[in-house]
Image (cartoon, rainbow, N blue to C red; front, side, top):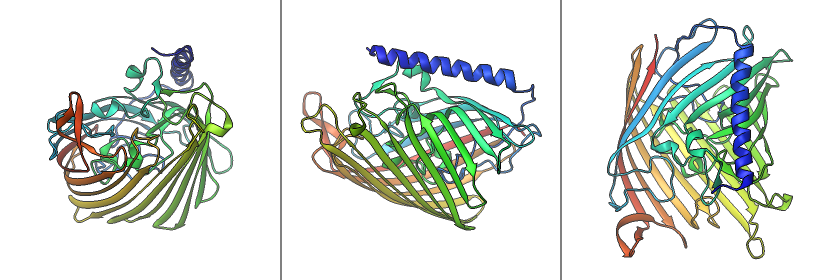
Amino acid sequence: MVSAGGAHDSHGWRKSFIGLLIAWRIFSPAVEVEAENCCQEPQENTATAYASSGPKHEAANGWRYGAYLDVAGIANFNFPDNDRWRNRSTASRHNQPAPNMVLAYARKEAIASSRWGMELGVQGGYDTVDFAFLPGEKKVDGADVLRHVHRANVSYLAPMGNGLLVTVGLFESLMGYESLYAKDNANYTRTWTADYSPYMMFGLNVVYPINDRLTVSPFVINRYAHLSYTVAQPSYGVKWSYRFMPHLTVRQTLYWGPDQTDASLEFWRLYANHIVEWKTDKLIVAWSYDIGTENIAHHPGNPRAFVMGGNLTVRRQVTDAWAVAVRPEFYWDRNGRWTGSEQFVKAITSTVEYKWPSPWITAVARLEHRYDESTGVGGGFFRNGEVAPGVPRLAAGQHLLLFGLLLMFDSP
């Protein structure tokens, strides 16, 4: 049962969404839809679509559309009775066929010759079930429907200075290195920091390139997890990106906002994401580090919660078709505020990829091994058996071996 505040927040969602569609209909000219590779390159928060579908096709008016399918088989050698990955929202169904994502979208980029843009997309699959929430938080009214919205935004490129891009609605997160969509990442499974930082944001962001090296992007959004309900107050942040040399870029995103039912400033969350990326046509090396903190309201003494995590992604394009990637990582949730369990996690992921491109469909096959180790008071992964009726047994380690098939559909 959602509180009155939650219901009010849901009505705001609906009004905003309807307003976006009306604005698009008023200001967008009639267009013919053309094609592109599946999905827009994220706004510098991920490595460029690793499984891109080859040549991009774009109409003169900037319209693109496409679809995406992600199906996997993930073998969990703990053989948990519930077939689940504990404390994770993506790639979490194991020892069974898993349709993790299906997606369709249409979008028009805002460019100098046609300044209005928009994105609209729908999605489904196991990875859409819990990606927009943190453990223990209330969901907005209608969240089970809204989680199927991939994008819903309107943008305008204002003729100011070097070009001021304003976007309103539901857009790709400005925080983190990895995407919700496996096709955009070097590995199939996501990092712990990715699963517990926003994959999407709802609100307003402004992107301004100060020069050819430095870009700044302030934003105002509804909250950290866009389909959770805490209080009806916005959150704030800024992202900056600086290109030191042709292949080396540094990025930082800062977030500050109320993510508890008590909106006093002393309980606001402060979260920072840092990325250093070296990127060439054949090699990508990226280090990502996150740290977050907040005082916990309604707990004796209002203890300060901390979370931090980091990962190093290395991807090598061996041939046009073959690529390999490896990614060590760690994640520390000192108080269990983010994952719901007090734990320290170490993991290593290794991936081999093969890509079949064509003008209409690109198919990507990934074979991946992953090992996670979770320690601490609340650490562990599900395994077979129970310690008591309804209480699953836990193991400190978990081996996964998976095969993922990613299909990107594009019009020629």
